[in-house]
Image (cartoon, rainbow over all chains, first blue to last red; front, side, top):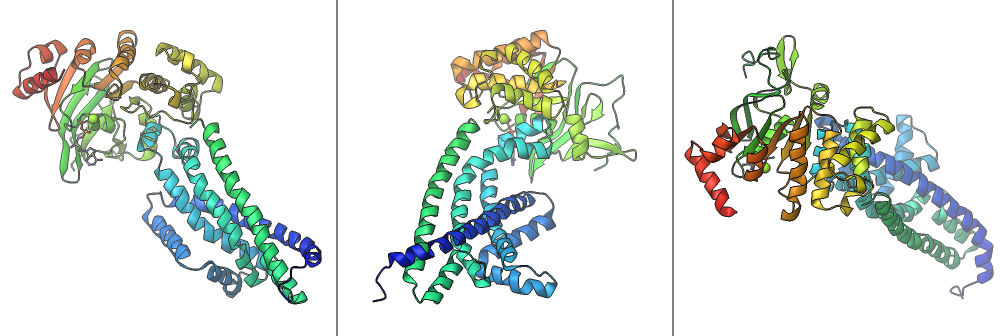
Length: 222
Length: 270
Ligand SMILES: Nc1ncnc2c1ncn2[C@@H]1O[C@H](COP(=O)(O)OP(=O)(O)O)[C@@H](O)[C@H]1O
Ligand SMILES: [Mg+2]
């Protein structure tokens, strides 16, 4: 009977799954770090007065948002080498996922920045502040709290999308579960455990994000 | 636009603190200010009154360089503000030039625009530290002095959300003064306030007029206040100065029909 749950097998594969979980967290974390920074750059680039730049950035964001992540992963990994960019599955994967989510995060930042009242910009101008100080000291601190919820959603999103990296052979959770299943002709336990692990990480993350948002608002005195 | 009619710099003998010279401002086809000419002498307190939409706020915003102008030149302390000299000609000012010139001007807004994530003291220190390059210590001393002047020293560590409108506006005045501007602009600074706290803000401005040699340009709906403290009152109508003069004359014996109509309409409303 294939649907019979085997605890001994579950315990046996647990260490491998745990290692894969670490890999998954690294991939998600590194991809998210890229997305956080690049997303901010994209958001700020869209606010410059230089039309060619804002045009290119907007089209890039549109393109990323309108095409599947899996395609973008394949593109970086398989098409990159034709342009002399030969990257490991890991590097390709994190770049692709980071690029992908930077487009979404740039929209989160943009909304956050646009939510800061116009009077704040005018006060900065009246105090003769530089553009850099205006952004770093006044606008971004106020744009952050309303952006945290969206940023948190995409943190969970990037984590849940890491299985896509299995298509180019990154040894994250899904890839490992597939391998375990194929080696043992048993898929019930590895796949179930993958689900449990994702749930066990996603759920508290969403809660932690909400706590962080509250803490940030208090810290900024908002 | 022929700029040759505008001097690169005003002569020493004819150098008001602020000069609007044939200044025109329009939004698309809507002409908001039409060939405005207005001089403000050093140390003078000038009030602007007039119906809503007559261009009062726009005058201040142009001087604060929050708006670009479509024609004419604004001079501050003899030097062009909206333009800069380049190859012996006036060309529109670039951001670098504006940053140099803007330091002479400070502004307080109808809705205060304090930085909500900073305390009253931090709001006041921000400009002196980040823009003027003062040390934290110097900036703190200067800011505390000004917060005392506006009667807000006891609340210096409060965030704006914990302050009443009148208190926020007083902090905003201190914040602007901390930059040591030569010209202070007040745009309806009491309009967003509850009636019972208007006095605490107008008293601060009265004190500034009495004790400090600032040049001030103030838009207000409070005729009594404008009468008390102004050296000159300008009545704006439809983007032009319809009438101007010393407060006793403008309020006591206005010459133009529109001024009379406006003043009696305001009187009725109170
Ligand atoms: N950003 C803008 N875009 C279009 N029209 C504007 C803008 N700002 C002001 N105006 C118009 O300019 C005119 C003068 O405005 P304003 O100077 O604010 O008047 P006041 O302060 O005297 O009430 C009004 O008709 C107003 O609608
Ligand atoms: Mg106005």
